[in-house]
Length: 283
Ligand code: NAP
Image (cartoon, rainbow, N blue to C red; front, side, top):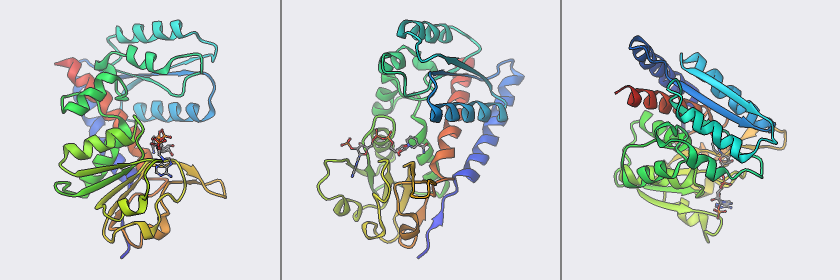
């Protein structure tokens, strides 16, 4: 079997076109969806991420503001900026790029964002909403994974999903989303005794670890769907995921590549959340 590739670029293009259309409809009512991206310090990777986010907004017709601050910015000043953005009616979504410099309490800053503008879905209110099935904002990466499953019309009811990784931004929310769609969910982590025994039972595997080859072909049940969230560098310095793509694609029914899989979907879901925030604010 050779797996069907779930193309994150193609799906993103389709979803971003839908975002642009909905943004136009809001604009006709005098509202331009707006995202504020706040970057503190000069982390190289963060600079690339925020540039990509701002460009994606512009391409979809969303208003975006990039606020860049020195690494020496105080926590109090950052909290004051977040408060100002909370009160700015032209801004519907606020994203504070992580990581923040060590002297700033990142969780405190996230909790300062109004839940109505928490388009990253990291606020404790968003986490609580996801856990209880209430309306809120879903974290973009696992939300993108759910869209990828939707794109292949995958019915999760009664399926066994194994999530490898339990971070607050990927693994845990991923597990809750799969649960909400009636999958039976197992969460694995660094303390899991026999990862292979878990993954071999899975109909769906989401790898969100940050280590190459965490998932190899011998660990995958034939016909399983494999979503690779990981972002690593191989020996040649090229971007790769957590999954041994060449091996696993011979066993899985569907697989996401890296690059071109979950990565572009993460930014796409940020646009979707920002649009959603603007639509909610307009009601
Ligand atoms: P993280 O906070 O470092 O979490 C990694 C998780 O993997 C932890 O729960 C850890 O377990 C678990 N783990 C570590 N080694 C393991 C092993 N050998 N077997 C099973 N589980 C193991 O990372 P993250 O923020 O969730 O990100 C995970 C990966 O996704 C990274 O490569 C990151 O760059 C990537 N990522 C990609 C996107 C995207 O847009 N494509 C977005 C976000 C993240 P413990 O909890 O026990 O330590």
